[in-house]
Length: 284
Ligand code: DHB
Ligand code: FE
Image (cartoon, rainbow, N blue to C red):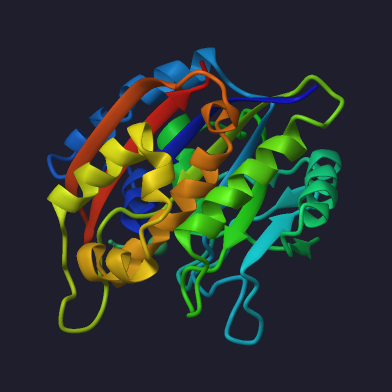
C-alpha cells in the first residue's frame, strides 16, 4: 500500500522564486534564507518520495472570482507554471499522478469532503516556490506532484478544524491505494504577512513561533484556533497557515501512531513582506 512518509511545511513568497530565477540567491539579503533550506535539500536527495501531495493556494491566477473552489484536487498528467503577469517562471513542468489523484478524490469525497476535481490547471508560485526551495533548480522535478488547491484568498475560507479533519481523510485515502508508493504531504503558505491595507507589512514572530511549537506538539489544540485569530495575529495573508493543518492532519500520530520526528525547523524574517517558516516532520 502507499504510505505517507513525511510532511513538509514552508512559506511560498514569490520573491524567493524570483531570487532563484534571476541568480540572486547568494546575495546578502537572500543567503541566510536559502542557507536555512540546505539541510532540507540534502535530506530530500536521500528521501525523495514517489509523489508529493502538495497543499497550496492559487492567488487568483488559475482561479478568479468567477469560480472559487474551497478544495480542488489536480488529476492531470502534467501542469505548466502559471503566467502571473510577468511570464511563467522558468521552472520545469510539474508531472502529476492521475491514478493516485483519482483514487484520493474518490476516497475523500466518499468521506464527505466536497472536492472540486481539476483536470487542467496552471500552477502559480504557491506550488512552484516550495518545489524550488526543496529541490533547487533541477532540469526536471524528481518526483510526481498532486496539486491540492485551498481557497484562502476570497472569503469564506475553510476553518483550521476542517483542514485538519480533511488531512486525516487524505491519509486514509493514500493508505488505501494499492501501489507501494512513498508519498509526502506538504503544507505551504504563511507565515505572518499582510500585503495590503493599514497593517501592510505586519509580521508577528512570537505568534509564528508559537504556531510552529503547536503544529509539532499540539496539533489538535491548534486546529481549534478560529480563522479570525490568524487574521488578527498573523495578518490578512497569515490565513494561508490553515493549509499546514491539512498536512499535519495526515500524519500517523493523529490516527494513534507515535509522534513524528522533527527533522528540521527554520524561521527567518523577512523575505519580502513575509515571515518564512519551515518544518520537516517524519512519521515515526
Ligand atoms: C508575498 C507573500 C505571499 O504569500 C504572496 O502570495 C505574495 C507576496 C510577499 O511577501 O511579497
Ligand atoms: Fe501567498
